Image (cartoon, rainbow, N blue to C red):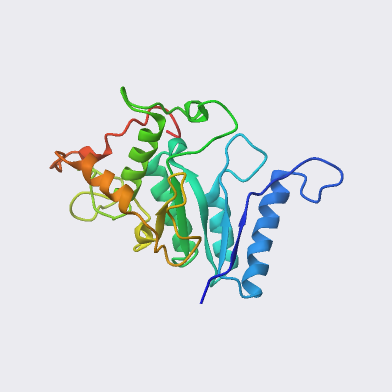
Length: 237
């Protein structure tokens, strides 16, 4: 049996002939569209992420709102350009949205594709490490994101915290168990088998590169994990 869903770019235009004239119109109509799709028996509601365009851009507020208004439909993205993302903030945002949705997020991520502006990720405060490309940077951000979604502690706790800490190194919160298994790597190609399907997508290419990049890295004790050494200058601080 095949699954049926929709993928929305979320275009809007101030044209008088349009019924979607603003970003607010697009966001509210996207929520209502997902609710209606679930009522009709559809399996998935997915949204594109495009920066510097009159389209949907920041996915997690929308996904959280859709998750709060629905109960069964899979919701997700196709795809998030990881060159623009702070993976630590993204772990928190994605974890929150997934918990609100009851574990229904199916996130597509990518190393990037043609965009509206030249090197738009630079305006977000990111730049590749010396000798690397912007695609390398996107893959590195994705590696950190996927690693932190495991929910393992990596940050040294303050000995005099504002609130009591659990024992051991601290992880990012909120953590949503199982979310990492519902991420698929778009990579600007057709390697994924389609939208939805509980993330049974081909991650082999990325996982191989992930293992290669991690070769020689060791886990630090009492300090931040060295795997978090991706370049995150600027961006969302």
